[in-house]
Amino acid sequence: MTQDKFNADSNDNFEVAGNQLTDAIKKLWKDTTVRSIIIRHPDGRKLMTVPLAVGVAGGAIALVMAPVLSIIAAIGAGLAKVRVEVVRTDDPQR
Image 1 (cartoon, rainbow, N blue to C red):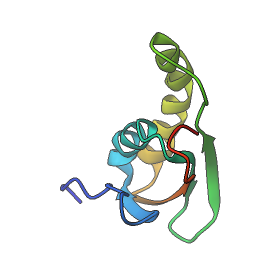
Image 2: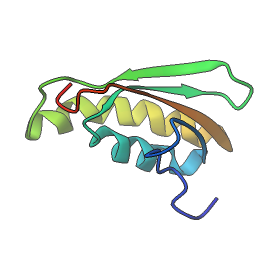
Image 3: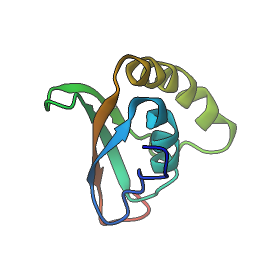
């Protein structure tokens, strides 16, 4: 999966290559309708739930994201593919 296949605008459940997981999460992090992201093993077992911070702005986002992205990168490095479930809210302001 070398293409940018993790755009979840129309589909809230998708698979992504493990090495692209961090990029997919970073992209979803900027979407104001995303409330949380669930990372699952290809067989469906839940590996991690990432609740997205409400009201975090500017440089604080980098501080909040750094440890979470490190864990996500470790998960992605250990698996060839992962399933991502996106939980959205109808309110774009969250």
